[in-house]
Image (cartoon, rainbow, N blue to C red; front, side, top):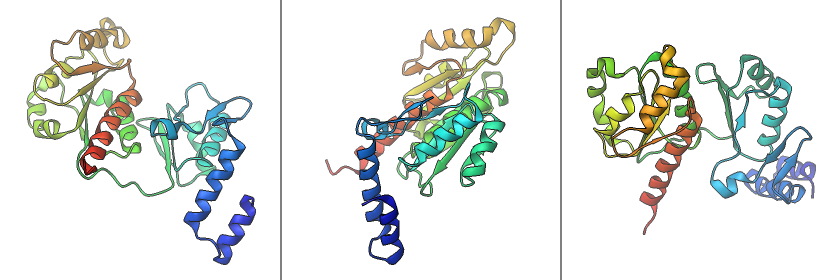
Length: 262
């Protein structure tokens, strides 16, 4: 039975959509038994969600708009959510022509699509904090990534150490989170400050924001790596995706354990 036959059965009412979805997934699995889809210029890992719990994410930087669109559409055949990062407006415009239901966020430079409505976590959340407005692109990349994993996200923005009282006004949100992402440039001190105030895991993201001696984020990265506050781990400069993914995995696993009868 091929996909056309399945669609006809759904149309006549002889097969419900959920049963058809199972058959289609089996057909696709048979077409790509090694878990990859070879597109010539790209070989997609279409079984990644089965191994890791989340589909392959598209890194848009360096790809042509046509390549990104083709990869996006191919992934949509296999999974119920697609995320692309570092997406330019030109790339997004081409994807949106074919997938009007996709959402492009110019701040985080992400484009995302969900087959089903987003139902966020009920029993916990990820907190994303950033030092200043200039850090927003990295913070939002982290926030949207965590949301794509299924986590509810609480945003705490513009709470840098130059006006530390702004952080104290939101400290309860940080303390109640399952995991915390902290994005900061300049000297990167915010991650250490948060680390001394909470008991939750912190994923620090150095950003490339700052004057010359910040060395495009190296100063912030070194400060975060040398933090004396326990519980702070560090991802690469401007890697909001990596931080959001790590925080989302932590939160989602905690939620699964909370639901488990054991």
